[in-house]
Image 1 (cartoon, rainbow, N blue to C red):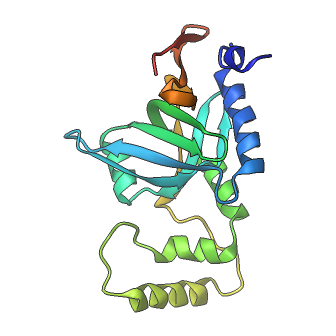
Image 2 (image 1 turned 45 degrees about the horizontal axis):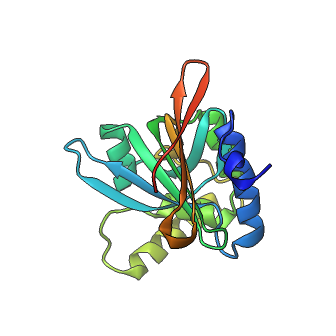
Length: 199
């Protein structure tokens, strides 16, 4: 299959997975990192990096504090976009769609797989809110370390997973003279419709 035909497929989710495998082999730091764009109820946007923790036909999953800025914005305006950029591959993927929370069971399972220090950190951090200094955070970490002692650390009620259910997925590949390849997939009844875009 030549590179041009590779971008025209009936299954953009599988194409994304294939690209991600290549990125994991070629990127030295956080190949699953993506810029997450959200907007509040008034439409004012904000963007930050998150780590992709799962992808399948249902969508793209990441986890965060639901009381953080992004969590509050997704509650107000449940639509978001992800942008992956893999410098070593000269490739980019953009994903857009509505956002839904993952099940409690899925969130519990992922939280249980995290390092204990990360579990404690999820309890200790009032993500996105002001703090007086680093000592304030360290004090909270010490408090929750003592609270849970050597027992199991439960998932905080304010921490969970989100799934972007893609309506649009765009694949971009760098070409010489800025004549890049761009293919946009739009979800339609029963599958996906692809169209090439001018660079």
